[in-house]
Image (cartoon, rainbow, N blue to C red; front, side):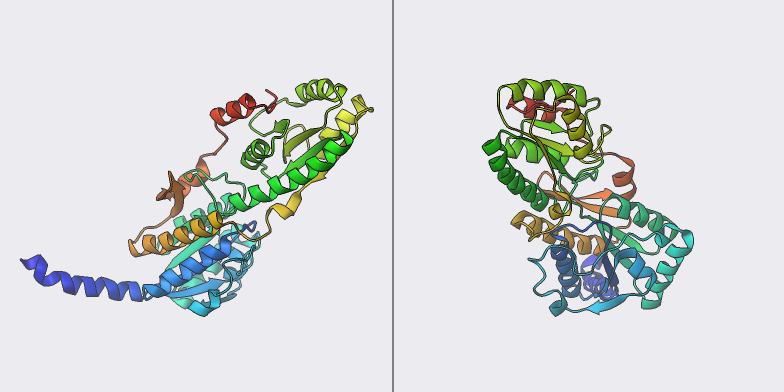
Amino acid sequence: MHFCIFAPKLQIFFMEIIKNHKVGVLTSGGDAPGMNAAIRAVTRAGLNNGMEVFGIRRGFQGLIENDMFQMKSQDVSGILQNGGTFLQSTRSTEFKTKEGRKKGYDVLKNYGIDSLVVIGGDGSFTGANIFAQEYSDISVIGIPGTIDNDLYGTDYTIGYDTALNTVIDAVDKIRDTASSFNRIFFVEVMGREAGFIAINSGIASGAEVIMVPERKNQIEKVRKFLKERALKNKSSIIIVAEGLEEGSAMEIADKVKDEYPEFDIKVSVLGHIQRGGRPTSKDRVTASLMGVAAIDAIIDNQKSIMIGWKNEEIVQVPLNKTIKTHKTISDDMLNIAEMIGTFLPK
């Protein structure tokens, strides 16, 4: 009975607290298609809940330099379909210092901002986690935005699907010329720490060889494979994840050329085209769901968490756990790739 009498007053009290919330949002590190959808969702979900939302330009460096503005709904109109990040991004060395983080904290306090949404990858979350530990009165919420899809605690990161489709489209075009001249093409893709782009683009494009960081000492078996295949006068596509122990795609190709000068070998480094382009529907929708979930987490008084996507549902993962645990390709995925005709050196 007493609960029924006082519940409306409590609800009004908590709603007033929420309305007094001021939220900052920034994008940090490498850009990823779909970041704009996340910014838009954070902004509009925050405004819909009576909050004030501040956009912080140029990531943590912009925070330190007080480069921010209060956002209205119209500020995020027309950005959903654009790649990159509306708020821009940097990699801030100053934020890695205690003094730099203190400057950022002072800026937030001067605005009365009590929650910070960070959209980025492993490096961004590392900085955000340290900041959250030093200043526990700021609620730090992470949204995973990186084309590498290498963050622990989430099946999916914003930008991955778009990047994957960009790679597949490029490899399909490269295969046309490879087949016309019976050439061997080494195609380098991003994914320095984990080969998710390499393995999935390789499967989807029917690559003959995939070289990923999860496998070691690969080049000798690649040489043997290529010799057998090239002697049969067949073209080949070799997907190479950047950052392998054996070197870059160019370095690996040079080693093969030296041993087999009769092979017609070419190299394509796809580079930053993988980060650009209009986000796919999957990136737009998932980013939007994560953005709204970030505001829900703030309303629930959550701190130091990442919004993840597991088994087609939103989850919350402790921020420190996402950076302490390394996410790699499962053995099942590697075995499946080999089963359907792709050679993965062991």
